[in-house]
Image (cartoon, rainbow, N blue to C red; front, side):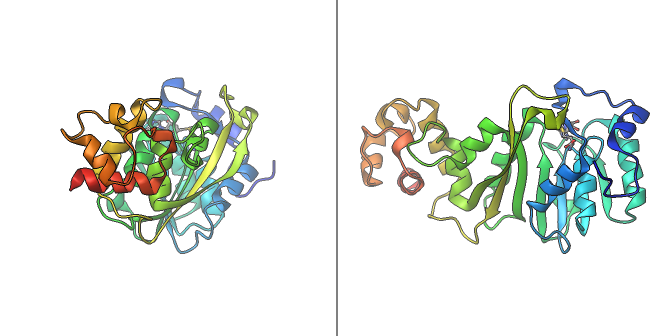
Length: 279
Ligand code: SAM
């Protein structure tokens, strides 16, 4: 491991500040600063961007982002035990790191950032999907952020990039690919983390499109897709029963068949269905 800044190695930081990992907070730390710089680079040029980082922990990825030249980093961390370690990083990069001791699900992060904004995070597994869905479903598009570069369990990453017809295709694939270009940028073995999680991890890069691929109301699309995939093996007419009283007519109006199954319906089909349901 080679140092990317003048701060102490992360193992020393963890020992000094007593940062034993807590499972309830999804704490699996990255301690190799070469690796955290590599993750930061997956987000592209950061020098003219503010970066939102959720869950900096002891600050490995935060240091990677700052070393890679991020204009400013706003880091939202729920665990107050991490604050002294993060304060040391803030002191080493004057004026470039703001730490918010808050729950990422509750904080108004946009108030602390100036566009252009990129989101780069090694997300806590317990709130990762919820945060992703929120970032993907603002009422207006393009969103406040340009791109999301996010570490997930590999299985979740595969659900985000899954094509129609595949086993992993579902709500996350439709919501993500409707409004973004998506790709898996890196995969990481459990040993990359301290403590090692049970599963492999992957970094997904989502680049916001200037406009969604097909017209649809985000709230209606989210409801339709959630219901359709809640019973993914059922035909649409059964899975969507109760969404509207005349759901079969609306499925047909969208150019789909009531006997189609959700996993075969492409994103364009779900958008047509959302328009038919809204209409
Ligand atoms: N970024 C660090 C790294 O890569 O080593 C830590 C990543 S660890 C997977 C997730 C971090 O998110 C932990 O530091 C944890 O305390 C924090 N966290 C968990 N739930 C959170 C929440 N609701 N809001 C903000 N941070 C949270």
